[in-house]
Image (tube, rainbow, N blue to C red):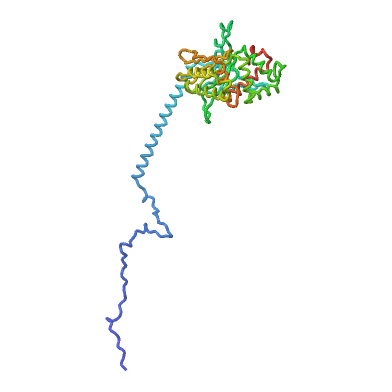
Length: 379
């Protein structure tokens, strides 16, 4: 048996040495940028690496610039505020203070005293009696007017006629309630006794004054569209007290707008009654009435008076602010003034419902006193 021959050393397997692995450049990443779906990017724990000196310098500069601007603005505002306050104080100190001359704001024309309604009467610096309207543009109406208009003779032609305020209110138009003018109803003081007697007799023929429940009954009659219109029509036609309406616009307007409102009111009440208002004389009187208003502007605050004398003649005067109160014209037809008066006093639709209610409350002041005593003490 042949012996087994061993291989030479050169033919034996040599140990394998592993080669170094070189990752491709496309797969080489910075360990700081390595991110997985489960682990966020790791940041460096050294704060120095995230500092940016240029950015910090810019932010610091901007901060101090803003701070300086705000401080400068505050200083200027403070100086301006001090100067304005000092100027206003200086103006107030220079203006003399008139004690008790200021009028309260938004006072009601009537106030309740001891269960009865009374006019709210205040006094201006000259001692004149005023009634507040509750309107900021036309704050007050005079309680007494002394005019030469309506004088019937004798001493009245020398001293004039005194008219006493009965009630007032504001005239508004459209559903927005735009205020057009304030209107007040005045009656000659010497004629109050006649109208007072007629109103008292309407409720109690044998009385000279009305008690509380009778006053309520009269109030209902005056506010009733049909009964109130009939009562006032009889008073204007039979008693014929001298009276006037004082109209003061609360906004700039003109005579044409005022005329249109007056003419519409008269036409609405005369339509359907051709027996009383269908004649030629009434038509000519209406043309004459329209012609009186062929004028220009009526600035707010200017006074327009519509006066009806004992004969029913209508006289219109206006204060233009330059030449004073002047007469515009007259309409002698009694029916024109009577229909114009009813437009404020009675009916289902009046020019100013606040004025109508206010006038009724003023009438209540008359009838609660004995007939003939109102002329000496009206309020």
